[in-house]
Length: 245
Image (cartoon, rainbow, N blue to C red; front, side):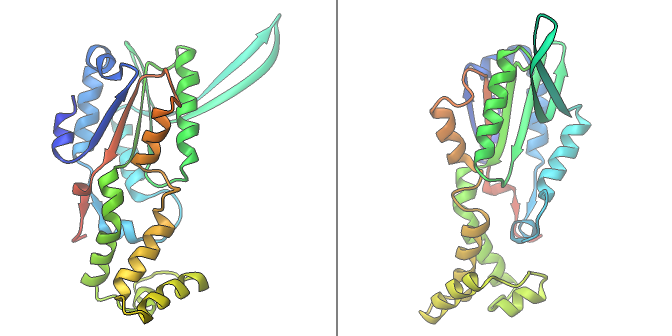
């Protein structure tokens, strides 16, 4: 399953019999999901963009899933004892697909703080226990893409003749913090090229180990977070990145 994605370098992992459930209950959804991910492209300019807010990649994916019938859903569960409400818990799912064979939940974690994985997996666990969700998925940066980011950002800087913070400012980057300036300038004084020094600092700050990426997700799944909800996990590969855009 998802062999076309694997051929492009996508990492795909299943937990709690998710592959069998997809093949029996959600074969059409699985094909549509694969088709949608096959078309994912990420311009390098979006990777180096230092702006805040939801990433453009996430926005494009959201629109694509919306066209396939996925909707944001806020699911509220109440505990009522003898007619009196004792407890109410709500779970917001960014992408929820209702089918005649069950419901499918999906979250995109392109670049959040890694505790978002705990939130997603615990939500999936509770919703599965209550029979609301039959299978769930998470899409994040793959391990190979995570490892390649520094080289990609450096190559972008070289291609764009970036050799100083002034060059970055001319391209719309905000002023670096004093800490960032010291880190980069210290490396440059030691003989390291600005592109290398800046790329290392940039990727550490923006796409560091404490953000959402494949290895962080796998660590949690191996520990049983989200179990026994059936899970399919996707890691975005370096092949989606367009170095010329």
